Image 1 (tube, rainbow, N blue to C red):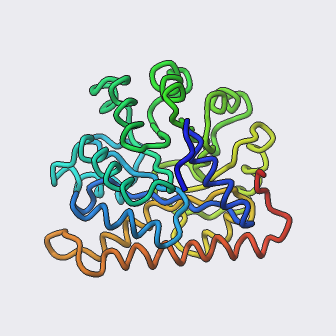
Image 2: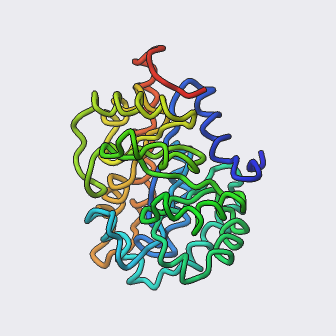
Length: 290
C-alpha cells in the first residue's frame, strides 16, 4: 500500500483506475480554503468521495489563469494567513493517514522562485508531493523548474489548450510527465463547457502525439458533464464546481460548517458516478491509454 517512488505515484493511480475500466477522477481544492484548519477534513472528503488524484492549489496574490471562483478561494486562504509552509504541512499531515492518493501542487512560479527551486523541490518531495502544475512557466523555461522537478522525482504536468497548434504541441509535450491536462476551453477556469465533440476530437489529436494519459478539465460541474468527458478522456478534472459547493456550505463569517465536508463528499461521489457511467456507456469506443 505504499506510494510508488520517483514520480510514479500519479501513473500508478491512473493505471489502477484504468484497470477498473474507467478514467481517473482528478479533484482540485485550494489549500487553506476556507480556513487552514478546515482543509485536512476536506482532503479526506475528496478521497472518500472517490478522487483518484488531488490537485492542491497554492494560494497566490496574482492568479492570472484562474476565474473568480478560484481567485476568491485563494483570497480567502490568504486572508487567513495561508503560506507555502502551511500547504506543505497539510500534505505532511495528510500523508500520516494516506500514503496512496497522489497530490499534485498547482500554482504559479513566483512563490517557488522566491523560496528557491532546490529548497522547494526538496521540501515538496519530503512532504509527500507527487507532481507539479505551474501554469505560468512555458516550455521554453523548462530548465527553471520542469527538468529539476523531474530529477527530484516529481511529475511536471503540462497544460494543453484548444489553441495549442500542431507546431507548438511537441514542445508542450516534450518534458511532460504523469498526464497531460487538456484545458477544454480557452479563457479562465470555471467557465462553461459546451462542445463535447470538440473535446473528443482534441483528445484523439493529443493521443497522436503522446502516450501519456489525457485528463480533461475546465467546465465540469456535475455528473452529466463528467460522463460526457469520461466517454473519451483518460481523466476528468473538477475544480471550480467543488470550490463553489464548499463556498455554499460556509457560515456568514466564511468558516466551514458541519455541512462542508458532506457537501464536498456528495459532489465528488456524484461526479465519480458520472465518470463510471460515461465510460460504461462508451463501451469499447473510448480511449483509455493502457
